[in-house]
Length: 461
Image 1 (tube, rainbow, N blue to C red):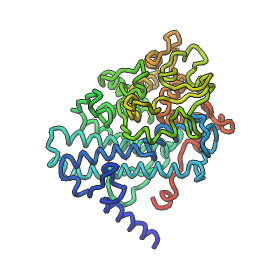
Image 2 (image 1 turned 60 degrees about the horizontal axis):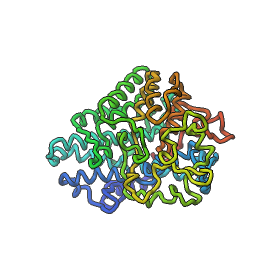
Image 3 (image 1 turned 90 degrees about the horizontal axis):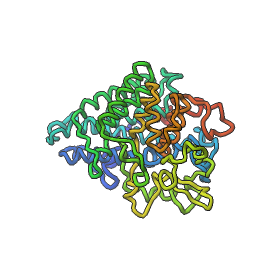
Image 4 (image 1 turned 30 degrees about the horizontal axis):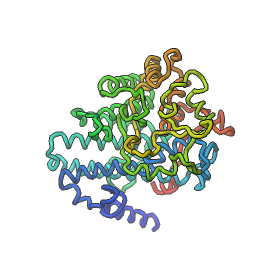
């Protein structure tokens, strides 16, 4: 009887999206699905609402960018209760005092956004070609939606799935392709990757004519555009990692570098989030208000600061290598505070009097990752050194070979407060990393890297 009741409630929740949070058009608007998809504006509002959902705290507005995933790699020296500073508490995924509730929120919100995406795709297939009469609009929206569905499932796999090279046949997640209340079967990591690639290849076809204009007053950098899809495919193929996959990852990364008309940022004093090389970002219009307790020069237990020794080690600024690295340089990548500059705060999300200077942007895919993918996939050190030189490291300090450690150093520096470094160390199954808690040093494993499913998902699927 209990299971029947739960299923009935789920059917009502999904079919009654008019007033539930399963279908959010915007932070201030709830519209019945059947009324929404009656004109181009309605379709566009639905897609805009999906991007808006992605900035929720549970996912890319906080946990999957600058907060939870960064705390898992021990970035900060804050004094917040329970998971502040350097500690092992955060890896206790079964305790609500630490990470259990955060993981549950991530999982639920990711699949809610996927439900919104699938609902949009349903109506695109049902009546989109009749209603979307602006040339190319149907194809663009279909490509974006497919790319976003792949993006969410891939990140779910990178979190709740196995260390792929160790257990690719682990059953871990459902891949939701329809907007319906019925259960979806759990699939292996390999099966999920195949579906991610299928969605991305289809998205690539639909976005073939995407003009991708990057000017500041256009929106393609805030959308799943043609080059973001190709870059994401490169990320996915590198993750799977067969010889053929590495060749494809390299080809796609090179295509993005050569044809996207993006170039590596060499001066981030004004372009702090490196938006001029960003292939896909989110816009958070209330960023200053939402982040003021975490990124502030005024102090407080929750402020995500680094002590001097931590920051200097990350930046290699205690040697000549990192002296001019713009990713950690004062006034460029970081704000330094204190008589001896003992407190350092990442400037990517630090509010300012002129908020537009910071852009209210959350970078999700940047061009620099394509250089790292090319280097790793081909073992050509040229791409690694080209990135390092662009960031201010002298060619005198060029690295001589593409090693896991050389890549680790750059991923650690390059994606500070962006959530990508955790995925790197998990993909490589690293037993240790900089600032790994002493009790876990040399012992990091799937226990810490693989997030358990929420209790309800394990019980009811």
